[in-house]
Image 1 (cartoon, rainbow, N blue to C red):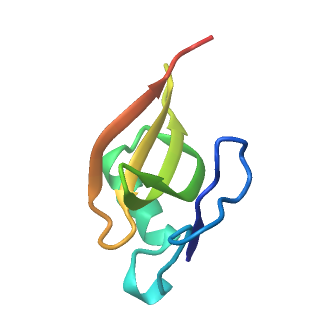
Image 2 (cartoon, rainbow, N blue to C red):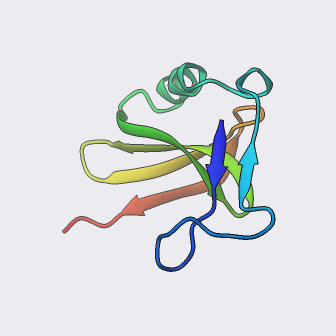
Length: 92
C-alpha cells in the first residue's frame, strides 16, 4: 500500500517524506475492514473504501450511508482499530 502526499493545489508534493509505503501483509486488508465495519454498523451501506491519512495516522477510510446521512469512518491500516473520528456529511 502506498500513500502519496498532495500539496494545496492537489498536485503530488515534492521533497522528503512525501511517500509512505507498507506491505499489505503488515496491515489490514480491505476485506477485513469491510467485515469489521459490517459487524459494527450493520445498517451502514458502504459506498467506498480507500486508503487515507487522518491526523498523521495511515488509515482505511470508509465512506457510507444509513437511512439519514453519509459518513466517513476511519480504521488504522496497521491493526484495524477504529480511529475516534466519525465525520457526518451534511445533507444538502
